[in-house]
Amino acid sequence: MTQYTEAGLPQAEPSIETSVAETHAALGPALPRSVDTSIAALDAFIGGFASSQVTLIDSSDRLLFDMVHLLCISQVIGDGREVVWVDGGNSINPYNLAGLCKRQRVNAQEALESINVSRAFTAYQMVTLIDEMLEPELERTGAGMLIVSCFPDLFQDRDVRWSESLQLMQRCIAAIQGVTKRHDVVTLVTNFGLSKLLYKKSLRSLVYSSADRVLRIENASRAALRLSLVNEGRSMMYHPVPYYQRTLDEFR
Image 1 (cartoon, rainbow, N blue to C red):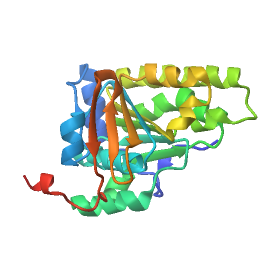
Image 2: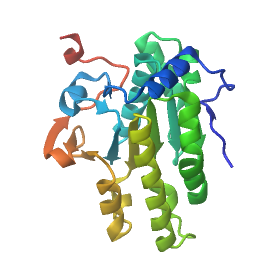
Image 3: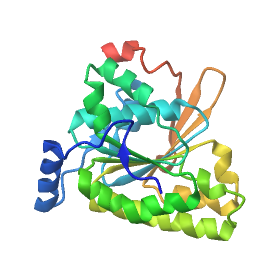
């Protein structure tokens, strides 16, 4: 079974930030927090990703991966609390994370030590990581963000009966919702490939209804994306640029 480890780095000793987070947890519920992408156009539309909420990002475009990496680094350099990342699709890229650190002028080594990653390769491993190991890991690290990337992928294995996959997903969703509230974390659940949620009739409804907010990203044309906040009935057109390039909006 895959164990929680830092992204490509040796296990770090508990930090001062972790101790502070544990102290705050003992004192009672924290004030709501919000994490931004640091891309002005996106932040103006989305309004930040709030703590104690599960946000589903359902995307047909690879902007999804840039966005999640940006949010991950924003969390680490924001309040100093760590990130716990459960990866169901081998989607985390340490080189991209290091590049973002350089863009933000922060120490990449220190930032990566605050990102605790575990990869699952089967649906059963995913369930074990989320249902049994996730809460102890959040308690150990005092994390401020939880990322569950490519969540539906492993549950669409043809060797697993759909009725069983559905039960396993429901079990994971209940666990994610529970730890999000108890630990006041910013939770991101992602799906890459809009058609994947059409695999079974009940799948899209299950995943969408489990989230407090749903951000849908779809290709509107060769150069533009349509971003929609499904629950709020709002949408915008967005022309993406590489994350390492700045736009005029960022200089206003």
